[in-house]
Image (cartoon, rainbow over all chains, first blue to last red; front, side):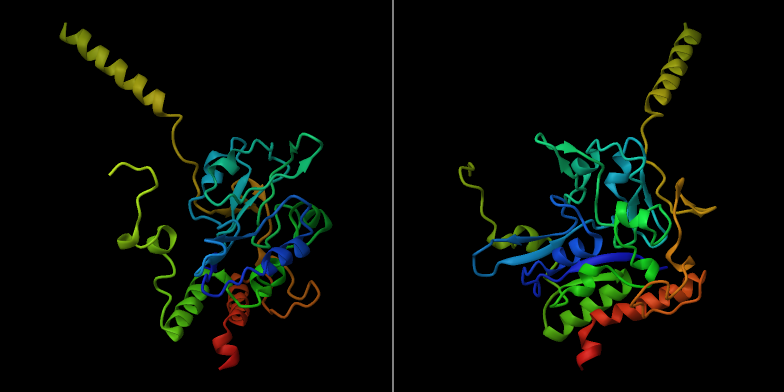
Amino acid sequence: MARMKFICDTERCIECNGCVTACKQENEVPWGVNRRRVVTLNDGVPGERSISVACMHCSDAPCMAVCPVDCFYKTEEGVVLHDKDMCIGCGYCFYACPFGAPQFPQAGAFGMRGKMDKCTFCAGGPEKDNSKEEFAKYGSNRLAQGKLPACAEMCSTKALLGGDGDVVADIFRNRAMKRGKGAEVWGWGTAYGKPDQQQAPKGAKP
Amino acid sequence: MTRARSLAVAIAAIAAAAAVSGCGEKDQVIVYQQGKYQGKTDTRPADNEPGGSLYTTSKWTKGDKGSWEAAIRSRNQNQNEYTRAN
């Protein structure tokens, strides 16, 4: 069974924001809503790394667990989707999500929260596939057209890979072996620094 | 006395069970029944007509999940430049 996943190769991401633009264009995402963002760690410092982040379509999704109206569902392809007709815009999913994926369109001077919007892995939503209603609420349904998410397919350096988890993992593994490194790209060391180089926070008592 | 104690223990056990019955996780096992995922109507991608949109290159048999997955896997290889360039 296909299990849809994204992976971003930080060795390749050049922070061009092409994925963000592709997503915005493909789904006609409103102003103020970013289904995908590029995050740069140690910006301006030699060795900086960028990563493209959106909904990771978690296997055990915390947004699904906390939603008070149970508007989320997961498809057979492992894509986490939600029903905007049920969403009440409470924002619990935003607090629960470790990636900041749920977005809320802001309208009015005081930023009233609307219904939640997030990456759909270009799989639309509960409306009829590829209908006008589906596009208006959820954006494009590329999976139903036999395509993969626009962000991954448009990535110029192929840093962002998206698709069947097995295939994506094979592509990444092959790439890491060809260039002779990559196993260290993901893991604790990349996220938090190497254990032997860890420094205590300033002001910490020894 | 023993009877009263056992009754108190039983009541406490029932109260504890009732108190935690609200806790738990929603079932996230994916079941697609009668066109619905966990009560929300949706259509599976494979149930669509291939070539229903512009610029579609993937070919599959409508309703055949296996052929849709094969088409997606094949398209996935477009992201692998090692198979494209070398």
